Length: 210
Length: 53
Image (cartoon, rainbow over all chains, first blue to last red; front, side, top):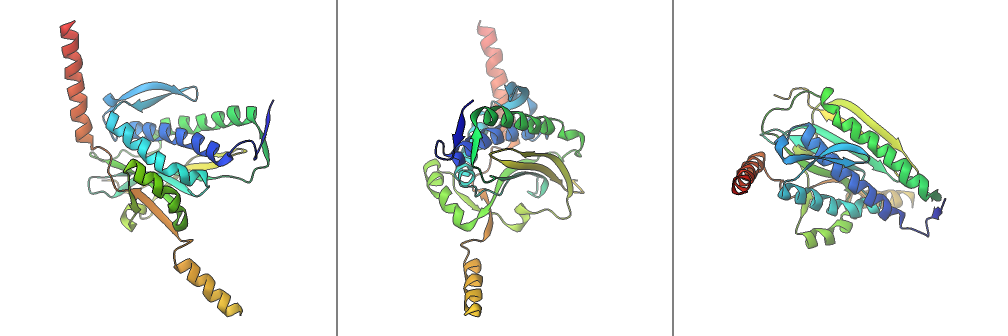
């Protein structure tokens, strides 16, 4: 068993890689489970040793990848407090918000075996919870769309700027209507604590969706 | 002096250096209609390919 220390690896980078890979799978699965897009564009794949549904629509896949590419530098520096997948109705009002709240605990050393197997096991549990979350949520109105929001600090946005320019994928500050929901129903889905990341996922659901 | 440092702290927060912000991409993802059209076109293409074989 190999023991890694802060000097051996850029832990922030490792965490960002792991979380962005996970968020990509999670976003695809949320879009499938909540029927934001036709089910015909999704194909069954195996991630974290469980079956998941991933889109095969090139433009959508590129959009999700570009989004996460811009978010990655914030996660790397522990500057992304929350990543939120918002599902909006035809009038662009949020009906559901899947909130991934994350932080990196202070770390002295970890074992590489623990890192890989334990984290994968924990993330698998998140995926399983997302895949069955429709059982605890009300149906969404037809014609919904989605967006991804990032809760960060003003100073941290500098970490994003270079990537935004490279990817031609600019970001703006969200307004109140996009960012918040009035008196939502809160549904906790999963919490994890590992050596490298703490994360919790909950859904905020609008009381009246139609 | 403590009043001055309080004022400074207030200024730092209000200046936005440590202010919480919520960001979202300028671009929108493809619409459901656009994706539906793509799906139908792909199905037509696949049935044509099968017909050619």
